Every structure is written in structure tokens, then in C-alpha cells.
Image: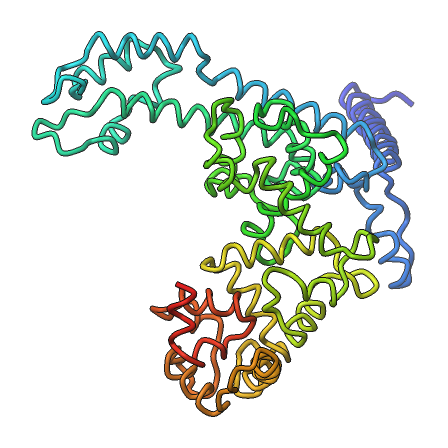
Length: 448
């Protein structure tokens, strides 16, 4: 039986369609086997178990990559390498010493004499001209916004060349420091953990001229002393990490890097928490308190701190609220205690002591809390042959002076917003309880 040409063509087209269908099916089966697709179980339990096998996971959060929670170590190495290249690229965009020198010479060429002989000014037109001549790398420092920010009281709107150059220097330093800190950001999330900060400080020590004679055995304690100040003030919620941006804006890093100056006056060193003399003094006090030489402080040992004005009730509360090991305080916890006492006027210190005074963790102080600490202070006054003050008078004066929103309780916000809070903070830290403020105004005068 002969078939027409049209029928043969139709048969061939049908065969081609079947072949394509078979090839497509084979390709689908192959691809599905690659991506882990399996036949779903009929039961609900089987469906849940195989749900994650439909498409293989290809996205992993950065923190899981860096923490080693993925089976692919190549991803971790790739991320670390990419971040290093990125930071190096950002570092190359910074102005080096020769470029800063050349921009100063260019600005000096366009200077306009000011009222005084030492004053060098520049107008906006020349400011823009210098920016164009300097090149694209300098463009961020020669914008209208920068010029407006640096304007002072000049009637013609000119700015000081020195102010502009200092602004450029400061910006370069901040970017350079941020890149340096980011190299220690192990998670790549824009913050440093305590271990990251310790690594940074440890590697920074050889570059600080004022720490040149620091003994190797003391370096771990110096690192701990240094890092603790950053975390006490910049991590009040005790999350264990600090944003790099907050480190740069705090000013603490300026104090630390000030130790690069070989000719730093001794007065500045004494006032600088990060200086070798200051760190040795704090650590020496800790060793002197440690009478049994076990490297930890007991309640009785901490009771001898300072001039011996701490009372037993307050010390008990400190040990209840702060981290201790077998009922004793380590050096890191002791540093928090010292920082709170040495910085009595700061919100962080107030928060530290408020947590101790808030016996039942209610979020506020009431008459019970005041009376609880009053007992310890009353006993202390009797020991020093002082006449105890009536508690009702103490309580009434305290609430009158703080003037809280709720007349029956004092919150942390009440203390923080009170116009005379600075006196209250001083009193809390020195006499270990809020109620001592209202015993007599003479104490406030003595403290101030």
C-alpha cells in the first residue's frame, strides 16, 4: 500500500516530536537527579522529610559560612579572600602621604590672606578649581556640602585652608582605621567580638611608643584592661560585640592611638586609661586586694577596696549581679566595677549601679530597696560613731529630690533625666546606695 507524500511527511513530523519528547523526559530525569529530587512519599511525614530535597540548598548566611556550619570549606575560604580583596581595594583609594602633601601645596597656591597674618583662606571658586585639578580621587573632599560645613564667620563666605586640610586628614584617618578594624571582623558583619578586639589590641601594641617597655608577661592583662573599657561603654546590653562605627565615634580609639606619641606628657599618660602606668596601677590594686593570691577576689577582699567605704550589703549585691566563679570575682569583672566607680557621671555607670540597687529586678526602686541598703549604711555609720539618720526622712528626701513620674517608684529614666543626676551618680558610686544622697546635703558638697 503506497502512502502519499503528505502522509509520509506527517509521520516523520510525529516521529520527530516523539523523539523530542523522549529526549526532554530523559533530560528532566537527569536534572532532577542532580538536584536531589526524589519521589515524594504519600504520607505527610514523608512529604516534610523530602521537602528540603526538592532543590538543593545553594544559599548560606555569612555567619554560617564563617562559623563552619556548612560542609563546604571552599565557600569559607572564598568569602574570606573576597573580603580581603575588597578591603585592599578600599585601602588603595585612600590618600597616601605624598598625595596629602601635594594637595596641601595646591591649596597653598590658591590661598587668600585673612585678617590675621597666619590665617589662610580660600573662596568657593578656587575651592572647586583645586578639586578639579587634584583629580577624581580627591572629589569626595571638594563638594559643596564639605565647603558649607567648614564655613565660619567670614563675611565673604571663605573657609580656612587649615580647616579643610584637617578635615581631609581626619576623613582619611577614619577610613584607614575602619579598614584596619574590619580586617579583624571575623564575621564580616560590621562589628567586633571581644576576641576580635583582643587580637586587634595585641597586634597594635608594638606600634605604640609609650608601651615599648611593657613586659611580655603583663601584655595579656594589658589587653584585657584595654578591651574592657570599650565593651563597658559601647556594649551596655552585654551582647559581646561592638559596631565598628561606634568604636570610631567613641573617641576611645583616639586615646589608645595617642600612645604612639613618643613625647606624650606624663600628665596625659596618667589621665589615659590605656597608658601603661594606668593599666599597671589598676592591676596592682587588684593584686593587693587578692590576699590569698589565688587570682580571684572574694567578698571580704573586695570589701577593702578604696577607702573602705563599701558595706557588706552592697558587696553582696555586686556578687549577686556580676559574673563570678565559685563565688569569687575575676579580673575582667573587677575592671567593670572599677570603670563604674571611676566614671560616676556616665549613663553606663548609672545603669551598672541601678542594676545592683534594683534588688528584685523590677525595673524600678521603691521604699523596700531604699530600706534594704539603708540597713547596711546605718550599720556602717554606727561603726564610725556617727548618729544614724531616720529612714523616713531619707526616703522622703530622696523621692522629693528625684521627683519621679510615679511618686511611689524611681526608674532608671527618672534618674537619667533628673536635672541633678550628676550628683546622684556621684553619691550612688561613693556610698553604694541611692538613699545616701538624701541623708544630708553636706555629703553632696563633699563629693562635688
